[in-house]
Every structure is written in C-alpha cells, then in structure tokens.
Amino acid sequence: YLVTDVEATGLSPKDSGILTLTIIPVLRKPPSQLVLDCDGMKECYYTTDYSIAPPLDLKLYVIKREVKIDPKAMEVNGIDIDEHNSHPDTVTLGTAYDEFKKFLKTTKEAYGMEPEDKFTWAGWSIGWDINMIEAAMNKWEKPMQWPPEDGCLLPTNFLWAPLDVKSLAMGAQDLGILPEFEEFVVAGRSQLNLGRLAQHYGLNIDNLHTSRKDVELTILVLNKLMAELDPNNRVHSNI
Image (cartoon, rainbow, N blue to C red; front, side):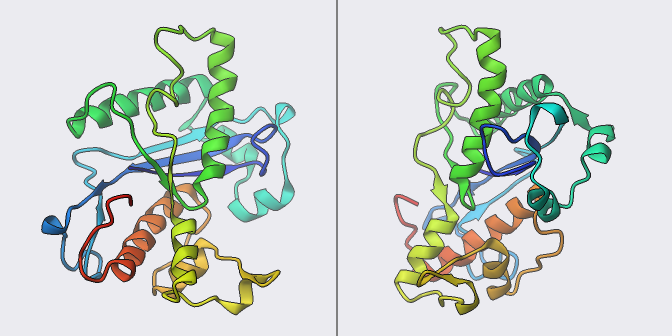
C-alpha cells in the first residue's frame, strides 16, 4: 500500500495545482506477524519501515497564472504560495515526475516486488488525491508523447481499487462500532473528517492539513480502525 496525501491550491483537479505530495509505503501484516503495542495500540496491521522504503515528500512549484487559487483551500493548508515557491526544496512538475517514477521503482525493489507488480493506493478520501495526481501526470506525460510501449506511469503501477480509510470508517459507523459525531451531521449523515476521528482515538492532530502529518495520521487511524473491526486478529483478506 502507498498511503498518500495531497495539498493543493483548490479542490478541482482540472484547474488546481498540487503544492505538496507525501507518499508513505506500508505493509499489511498477516495475523501471525501482528506487532503488539505499536504506538500504544494492541495490534499494528499496517507498518512502515523507513530504513527499507523511505517516504516520498515533494513540494511542487506552482505557476500562479496557470492554476485556480481557492482562498478557502489556502486557509486550510496554511501555505503561502510565494514562500512555498521560493523554498529550496520546491521542484518543477517535471522533476517531481522523475522523483515519483524513481520512488515507485526503488520501493518495488525494496519490497522484492516484480517490475510489473502494482501498488494499492490508500488514504483518507483517497479518490480526490488520485484525481489530483492523475491530472498532474497527464499535464506532463501527454506533451511528452509518452512511449506507448512503456505505458503511462499510474495505470502501469497501481491497481484500480484503492483503500479509502474514510469509507472504512463510515462502514464502522454503519456497524455501530464508531459513533456518529453529531456535530458533523449533514442531511442526516455524519460527515467524518480525519481530525475528528483522530481526536476520537486520542491522537495528536497538531500540524493537521500538512500532507506528511495527514499521511502519518491516516496510518495510525487505519490501525485503530482495524483493531476495532477485527478484534480477533483475523486480518480481512480484502483490506
């Protein structure tokens, strides 16, 4: 699994730009290898090992005249675009593409995967993050007339069905395992967000809405959810 989060200038993949991207590789442990007391939890179903497969953290340069900048989105992520663009670690889309491609290759090698093997996306409302990444990749690959024999980067490296942690949490609500969090009910349905669920589990939410923090928090929340959904240590075959 590659747990992923994007911070962007807006919500529309079509006309918003990616500001930051974090991807952390995680492994799902079988029942016989569950790690006890992982970050204070009884079980740790999904584990990371940065010494084997380090995360990918990217800051992307944004050409302001080419993207829509939503003030509300910028207020949430707290990023000043001018400061962001002038940061020494900020890279162009082309460089980000190369770094992403290299990251996929080295992560496969680190975990003994074959070149044709595919990852599973994972994250909180991960569909939006995937759409943002796809839009950015298309901007780069199509002008390059990407060689058809190599294929485009995303469909050749990822399975089509992601693991959406928000959907998993909503399923836990339907089962009565999680409360409805009444303060977030809209049109009769609880509107879960990552920070509220993390607070429910007693997790620290400082620096929320930074891509690195959101990925790390998603992994912790996922493990908490799995411990409740699978109390007898039977990891679900399709999760």
